[in-house]
Amino acid sequence: MNRKRIKGETVGAIMKNEFLSVPEHFTIDETIKHFRTASLEKVSKPSYIYVVDTSGHLVGVLQMRDLLSHAPTVKVNDIMLRNVIKVNAAMDQEEAVRYFIKHRFLALPVVNNEHKLVGIITADEMVDIAELEAEDDIAKIVGTGVDEITSRSVRRIVRLRLPWLTISIFSGLICAFITGWFQHELKSAIALALFIPIVLGLAESTGTQSATIVVRNMALGRASFKDVRWLLQKEILVGIVVGLICGVFVGGVATLWQESSSLGAALAFSMSASIILSGVVGSFLPFIFRILGFDPALSSGPIVLATCDIITLLIYFRIAGFFLAG
Image (cartoon, rainbow, N blue to C red; front, side):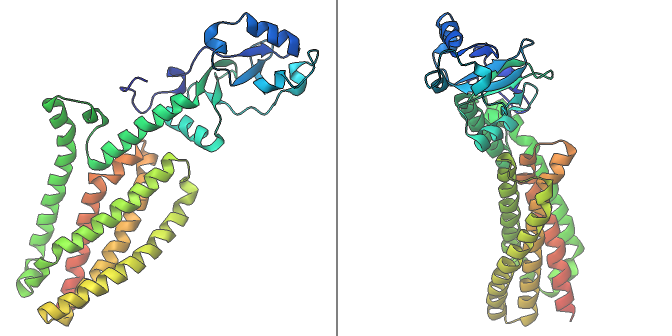
């Protein structure tokens, strides 16, 4: 397979033009004789026999064993399966992969907009596509491009990484400005600064986990817009449980270490809130990116980290300021 294949390419770009097809009026005997004169490419790995009408429209499908289990005079249109699972030549390759995962066929017929049979795609080809799509998603999650996996050019790699690192730079600057806005809280309780890394780290991990799970479910066709409510409810429940466990633990350590119940309460509440919101953000971002026409995998890398950092710092200092003022 061409390893330079990229997302967005259609089934028509990878389909095979060599396939087994017969007119619907053919008998079993005529079908067998027809295949004896077919090219080697067509009969070397036969999986399915596709049946077409006089205009070339796909009307049914047979398996090779059907030719052996029926009398020679039986017509193919009497024994063919009429409800054929097919894909359009204009369909995105990634969506075609989901069809194979769902139906588990060895091959699928490809039709054009007029429903005429124009080719087939095989499971072997889809496995290669799925591997490349997974590589592409992984590359986006870590903040680079799929080309870096095989690239030996330092200049090319730098060009792939810099845009993502720029996002981290800007989000870091925003976080620095947020910290500056809350200098009073930091001066009154310098211990707040000691716990910023753990608060940010937990929020980032939660957001990345949620986004990655949603993106993976999208790739497998198990996460649609109708699932938003269910995903949101799940992440809120998980966030509440995980947030309370982490918040109470870290808050307890902070109370004993710094001998400040206010600091412990601020950490417990702020960590719980930031973990819950980070899970929600991580669940929503892939859907937002899909609505905007971008690859959902983009949302599970530096973008979700930057968003969670900014939200978490605002929550942390706001809640800490409330408890410390009290």
